[in-house]
Amino acid sequence: MKGGYTRQLVEKLLPAIWDEEYAFGMREETAPDPDMPKGSVDKSHSNTLYAHLADIRYAWPRTSLALTERQAVLLRYGLDLTTREAGELLGCDHTTVTRREERAVGKLTASLNGERYVEGYDGVTDADAA
Image 1: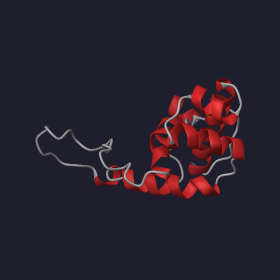
Image 2: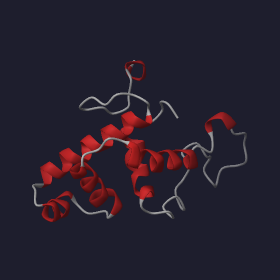
Image 3: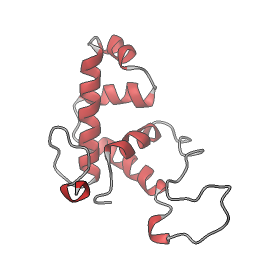
Image 4: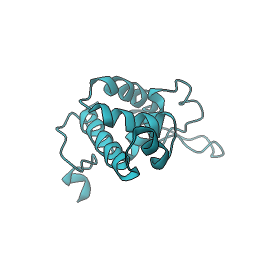
């Protein structure tokens, strides 16, 4: 899918790379609340969760990430460690882990959107901000 991925969405999907059961219990953002009466659903904007999960799993090995960035993301999103715990394991400061993690998420987001990564990329275009 070209476009539509934000940093927040990528961060939400990252654990699914390592945990195949992660999707169970996740709520589709466009789905109505379970306690709401039946209504109509716009099919063009529904059921995207599994497509997003497939995209993130596909993008992980194909996005150009440094080994240190992959390690930071794995420890934070795969093992759910704090930045301090990850820093202790990697032998660096927690701010270094945060910087590596943020750069990796930006690169993944840009890759999923079919765009070139620039420092601070968050997936929001100028048109979205207006």
